[in-house]
Length: 101
Image (tube, rainbow, N blue to C red; front, side, top):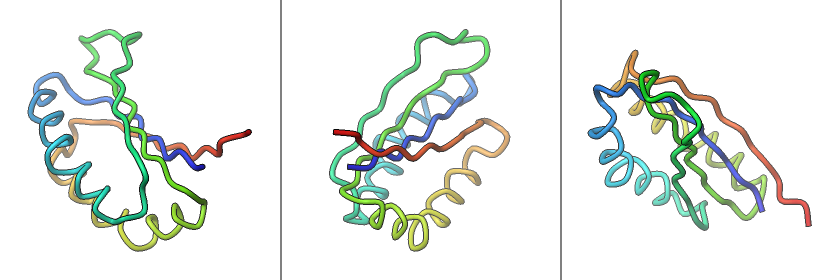
């Protein structure tokens, strides 16, 4: 199993709108690719809220090949939509992890 984790810090002034958009629009669009088997949203509670709100958006895939397909076929468009909508209001970094059993 592969975990594709997107950590995002979002400005307080757009936080509520962003979270609603993520839940109702962006994450469903990501999941509609058919490559993901599950997702979770975690709010990171160890940060100061005057510096925005930080989330870990977790997407689970069956294989690294599914991740690579997502990155080639779907990620550029979906990431661009997020960047355009919340330009200068967020910082993000992405991590790919493999489950060790």
